[in-house]
Image (cartoon, rainbow, N blue to C red; front, side, top):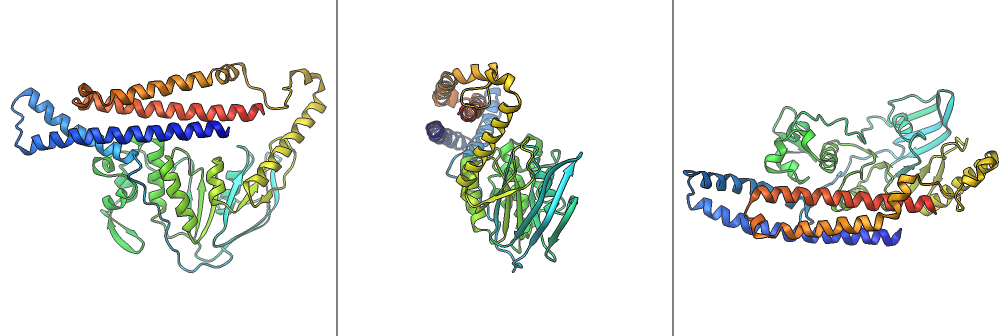
Length: 402
């Protein structure tokens, strides 16, 4: 998998360089068109009118491309907080069940400044439930939850529920005003959004028009306006580009308050967390949560849990033993096995298509036509997303076959 991840990074590097070259070509074209407009171009003829409209569209394309390149990065900074107590949140002997099935019990946590706690576990094991209990949004069956007086908690929810899809970016950040209070100072909402790579016409678009990564950045922009002592981030890395992830990592490291993270991104978790709260595997019958200080410790424990489950399954279902994989791993379906066996060929084809598209974006007939440029740029973005998803599934399949 390490080799595959290296391939992924190399592909990402290639894409970024290609987009940077693409941006340079577009800027040169835009410079020529802008100079033509400054000379007093008049929309007296259909061709001239179309050229003026294309020049404006080209400006928007360059603006969008700039936001995707490494030269610009989100300015994420959760800032300093007022003096916080050493004990911000305390969980004591907490138990929670649903439909007579115990998710967890005997949970004890002390959360204070510089806590960096990652929750790790399969879907459906109770991570979101524990977060709701920590936030006092749900009551435990047993045990207690303590919050320090006047504690402010900022919550980054995976579903982006706090974003109104019908309202513009601007009105999601400042519903009734043109300014926001950021770090105790008044700042124009457009200037504030520019910190997150939203500028020009984009701030007036409805949120439903944004990509998943853009919605994640906008949600982070909302969070930064909160004067919180505790950050709870549920899958914050979903959809974010590599550069924004790096900035988010540094912002979390510099934040003086407590941070609780739910993530499946191993690298991100290993960079920002100093404790891991591990949920037992579904079907294990265990309800105690384990605490580890590193990802390697958690991974070793997790593999032991998997092996225990596999041994128990073989013992109670010996009649199906012949259907088990020699390595004891989780079998792939026929469709998954077919995709896995052809994955490398499929990715090579997609990457070749990507190179052809990048080359096409630099052809004179495309460069001179802003409509074609926008179309090709969208194809490049969609194709890179497809390649990223292929690499992720490839790594998942290999792990399951170990």
